Image (cartoon, rainbow, N blue to C red):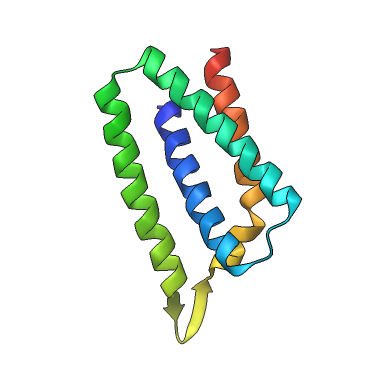
Length: 113
């Protein structure tokens, strides 16, 4: 279950990172953070292909890709209550370093089991 959650978080991170790259300045810190998540994703998929069924990995990856795309699109369009935005994409930008660290820890945790 931890594997599938980490896949979802990786796709969520990269969707937010793609939007961040289009809207904000791209710094070396963000680049390093993206590289950390990319290495963690690579390690996670190696773990998955070694320990799980290939069709399950591909199916969950496709489903996670679609769900995260819908989530980010919804947030970009805006969720409004009484004319005020409830949540914006800028709030997600603040949590990107924590999400990157969480992905790295979860990926490491899977290899440590």
